[in-house]
Image (cartoon, rainbow over all chains, first blue to last red):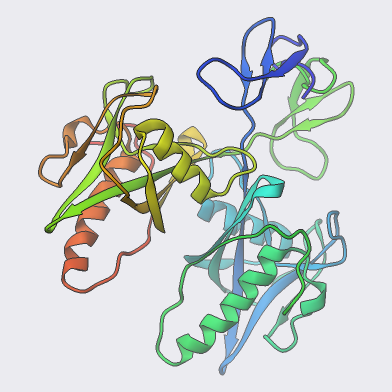
Length: 190
Length: 190
């Protein structure tokens, strides 16, 4: 940020009164321009047939991590709820319609000023198709997931937790809620 | 937003290519200025003595809702996690040190472009004091909470869910995770 978005005067980085952090402050009109983390919201769209649980992934057509696989997810917009955002991103990136279930994971990614959240979901049909931000979309079970080509740590951790919970759910347990803080930029499977 | 924060040229509200929402776009340098929801993070600081469960509330010294009671909470900052934010806000607004437990509630407030989250927490001592944004801070049990003077719907709903869960916890259950979408601006107890 170089200029005030209200009056076009240059901004200065300084600590306002009654604050303890540097902010972009307009020296002309006095507006303080706060910058806060953003939410990235997505879904885990599941297709289950005769006990073969498969998850819909998208291969990214855009940077960052072009060509790598991700769960459908993106920045939450104003005027929507986290559930709205999960459904919208799944429709936009994977052309897929889902029933949304509980929030499954919430992962802090402080070095990029983001919080990522993923909802469990059920695919309503197999009539999905890559959106403009995806090269292809496909269903994978745990064994076929391209674990070495996952785009983001939050997606890799969410998928690991999902298949781990899935085994417990088959034995009568419930899905958990998984909160993690992630500090590493690139994810590798264990 | 009236001017581009990168080049000071006036911005226009229009739908960029490959998008479906109006954004503030700079007609000179082309930067698209996205606006996204913010997270408000807080805690439910609990002091439990001989089965009398009390929660720390702050009476607001600032608008909006000056003079009304709230759980300690505020806007999450860049470079911190949701847990960091809950601890920081509790320290800043109530001068209180806490042990943080699980995420208890997540409430969408789409009409103000916010998502509110509250963590369960245990007060480490009774050495708390009002911060600059609070007129006073005090401990309340369910019966003594000023239910008609609660600042925000997300705080009222979180407190209701907390004391409801608390009764179940005394009978052996676990605390739940409570997700709600809230569309009403002012909260009234049922």
